[in-house]
Amino acid sequence: MDLNGRRESDNIEDVRDQSGGGPVGRGGGFSIPGGIPLGGFSFRTIIIFAVIYFALKLFLGIDLLQILSGEPGGQVGSNYSQSQSRNNSNTAQDEVMKKFVSQVLADTEDTWTGIFETMGKTYERPKLVMYRGQWVSPCGEATPAVGPFYCPTDRKVYLDTDFFQEMQQKFKAGGDFADAYVIAHEIGHHVQNLLGILPKFNQARAKMSETQANAMSVRVELQADCFAGIWGKFSQQKGILKSGDLEEALNAAHQIGDDALQKQGRGYVVPDSFTHGTSAQRMKWFQRGFDTGKLSACDTFSGAI
Image (cartoon, rainbow, N blue to C red; front, side, top):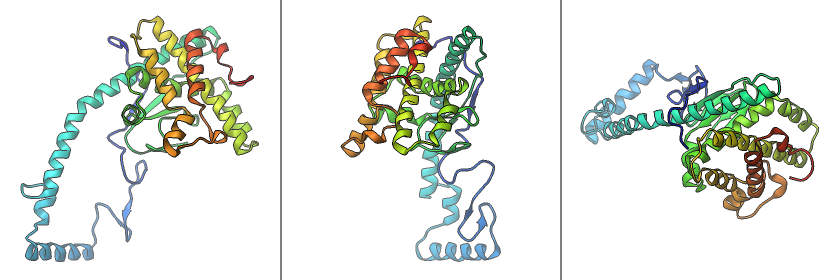
């Protein structure tokens, strides 16, 4: 993709320095066993620490204070310095990723604003939350196991950009346009929400069996793929795409199809459990959106898929 000179979206919420491993939460803390809040120590705790400190220093020659302070000779201090070095070296990479995500998001904003205007509607631009490891959304916990998702409650996309690395290493689906396809797919769900498609699905799902709900979910997801393809079509018309970009997105759609993921994970497939569509279906509907650039071509709810 050629994003040089393209504008960046203002609708990025970068919380990567606030998220990570451990208990998930906003503004709150957690306690160590025994109910002692982190950052506060009782008199009993101080006595226990003193006993441990002198015992380790006397019998093993280990100075806990030296280790905790990170001074030379302490293994923890050495690891901490290496960790800090890695974090510092990753800062520039994090900023590059943020710029890429914000430029892709901005381009989806421009595309869907124009499309909505032709329908006499106003496109409401969603926020995209960049987190690392874990975060909390109104729709539940955002974790690596969940992957990128759209929350219709707060109308935000949640993205752990480490997922892009997983796509490249685990699923062999790397490339900037493949990454952009992931973002555009989630934006596709936002479009569905604005058009009233997601609310109708969520209302109907309460009356469905699990198998029926899964089958309907597949149609919802394939439409989001088709909407992502529409964005891809407009990006191509702007001269953003390069040779091989379309193939990157189609390969990503293939690699993250339900059948491909289940074969990789368990060695066999269970079609009734599909929620996103097969590899062939995901490629088909992304391609259809890309070829036509029309919302009317993305009706995944009528007939066979």
